[in-house]
Image 1 (cartoon, rainbow, N blue to C red):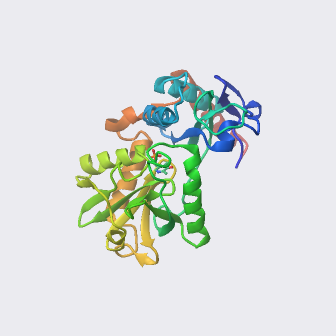
Image 2 (image 1 turned 180 degrees about the vertical axis):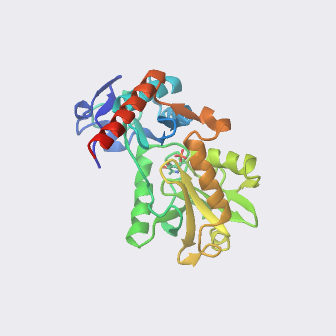
Image 3 (image 1 turned 90 degrees about the horizontal axis):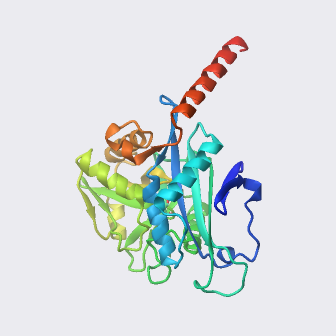
Length: 329
Ligand SMILES: Cc1ncc(COP(=O)(O)O)c(C=O)c1O
């Protein structure tokens, strides 16, 4: 993976190579950090890059920070502004991913959350698929249980708790599956290793409630709205038993990274007829139209990176490149 050119670090944009931390950094040693992953989608017709729901991501980021007792200097709007400046400087004309991180930066020994100073860092890089088989993934029920809210708050995106996700993901992949379905301590379905979970049974979409140790996903909220308002499909938020997965018609992972992944097999059992189902297919189409800014009703979720002048410059550059390619094929 190519490294970013820039980073937002210590309050300003610097070359990526200058954004360093020391090995004693608290967040690195004890996982005392929070993060967010946001996608930017290139719309080639408009020559525009749309970042999807940045302020909602940063609101959750700040909520996660509060859980660790961190006070950050920037609010959701300020973080969005810093991120947009950084992405603009990277100048992407393709889909990208933005990683934001707030961590306790003190180089010190001692496990605690008090008397520490947070630092914020943001980087962005071009990004494609997170799960290769988006239209037909094979999932397994993990032997690992989802971290409990009373152990490490599950609704927050807290760095240390991603060891739980990594254990589940690697176990699943080394056993030949694409992704894990992780149960919570009660044995109910929580989510994937880095994505929320939905299943379809008898025309109704079911998804675990936010009190079942899931991350409060922005994509989950997005697709609940799209399913109800655009596709007219009822969505019920309730606990899901493991065996309900085996008798479901369809299932999906949803998240910024995975986007919308159709699960077509679980533990070698086909979901429905073993191919992507009609609800997952319709939702995928709708979702990608929405995130690329092609649905005017949802444009308020899509933050344009390039302003008028930059858009014109980008268009001119592209036309010049096209003309050069014709002149020198
Ligand atoms: C554990 C976990 N659950 C769910 C999600 C989905 O959340 P979001 O849709 O906000 O990206 C993520 C992040 O991508 C995650 O890491």
